[in-house]
Amino acid sequence: MPSKLAMKPVTPMNANSQRGVALLTILLLVVSITVVAGAMLASQKIAIRRSGLLFDQNQLLQDINAGQQLAVTLIRADAKLNDTDSMQDIWAQPIPPYTIGGHSIGIELRDEGSRFNINNLYHNGAVDTAALAVFQRLLTQLNLEPDIAIALLDYQDTDSEVYQDGGDESVVYAQQSNRGADNALPNQALVSIDQLEQVKGVNAEALAALRPYITAVPYYLPININTASPVLLAALVDGATSQQMQSIVELRAKQAFGSIDDVWQLPILSSVKEEQRKALTPLLAVDSQAFMGLITASDNADNGQVRQRFATVVISKTAANAEIGNSTTNSNKNSNDANNTDSNAKDSQNNDNKKPKEVRVVTQRLWAFRPSF
Image (cartoon, rainbow, N blue to C red; front, side):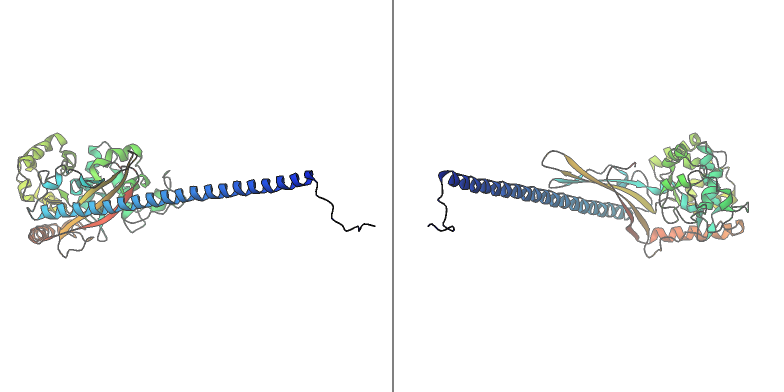
């Protein structure tokens, strides 16, 4: 009698079925390996691409740093040539791109002393009444409300009262639609002119009108007579117009003014009273203590697409050992100090011109797209 445990004979049908299962298993393994290998390859390509982009970005950042050092070197070299800054100087001329391999570095320089520094309104813990008057006249020249100057001063000063009014700032400026729930003013200097939109009375149109004539350098910056626009020059004197000040522009195009006294001798300014001259003199200069640089780093990629990064830098040029942030004068705290301040400012300017200039980068801001300049 045959045993119940005896193996059943393998029929051809069973053998074919087993071979089919084995083949299917092998096919599934091949497909799985192919999918995994493809995913690994795609991941590797992404990693390589990411590494390449990071390398390119790092290279562009290095190019920007090289560009700002070139700008510093250019301003430093110009400072050794003369004691003035004008549109005839080498920094003011078009600078051809500097090429390194497949990269190029572009540099554009602008004299910030050609503009009114809105941080001049309040410095060294006091209101600069001369600067305030100039800014109010500038606003009038641009058909803007002069009260914007008071609002901007209150934005910067350290007290909580409206200037020369005594009202509570948090109450007076509470209706500003462009301020948040906290009505307290920051009471500090501005780092960008774009912050003006937080000031009462300044909307997008007003800011657009002001932008070509103002700057926000983080230290006291006199106006450079040799580069200031006719509109800003007209703001120096009551009743003056930009058309009248065009004569100053034409004169300095032939030869830069060597001192502020040269400017006061001009017929167009002969009507300015001595007291007003003494108040304005510390606010004026024939050179610049700050420049704005636009650095453009470009990479000509293999696929023909140009990658670019931009940076704006503020470059200071001050007398060696001078502390940035200190005003050239503590005048204008009251009119009684005008005489002493005038002589001190002249002596300070003469001494500064004789000292070697220290040129260095104060701030740097990176941009993904080209900023307005």
